[in-house]
Length: 319
Image 1 (tube, rainbow, N blue to C red):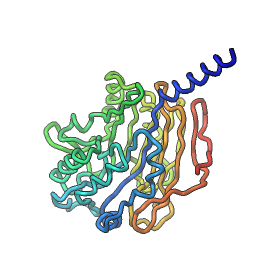
Image 2: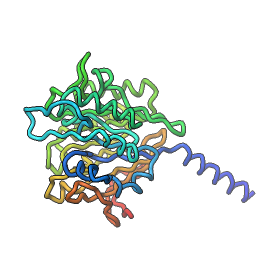
Image 3: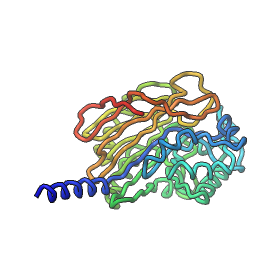
Image 4: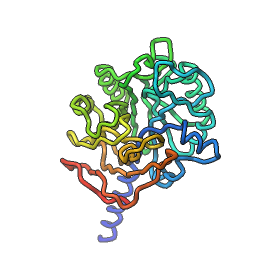
């Protein structure tokens, strides 16, 4: 009888493990300037994170620059970025997909954005949050494994809005509240077990989320989101739990140079375990970014974490 009970317990544990999916989110990845020089010299600025990234079924980050040889820099922007075409193949070794919903995807105009999507397609890196028209830009990234169907949506709400896709022209998905909430509900109706919005929002260099971010994150969860993940401010912005769902307001930078502050050189990797009920547990790994824009794991840090049933964010030791 004991052997039967043990066998049943082991079988139940294995079934539960088989029904889960691990998903990692990283922050802003900018492959021009310092990181671009690393690539030009034959290096990979994401190589130090290889072990951390490999621990998951799916890996997602925000691509903070077009990958292209086409287009001209936007004359109305202070900073414009463009990575070389072979950067797409480098991403293939690290990420399942990248969000293009940000304030730099349109830095070199429609030709560069279109080439970015084509190069990512050729490299086998999926993308979302932008498209060849408005409908495509709002199409979710669908991830399926172990019977779990996940829809990830990408939005930008930081100027210039001229980067927004239109009915017949390419661009990014702009964050209109009603549209975002409608997209979440539509993804659920289309069969998503879980929906996760990946937001490009918040004010740069602000260490805490705004009241607007807090309120809208809760609205997204009320609409059916299993978690809300954000980036853009070039620093991390803390975490919350609302109705059992995690909110990570900003992951900060992941690959980016040109920052002198500790906040600008610190990023988070969010690791979540998902099942059909939502987020079973999550934790954060911290990275530190060197002068070239290359991130390195920060071992033995006490970082935000939680598991299902927690009312408040806890702190866990990471190694």
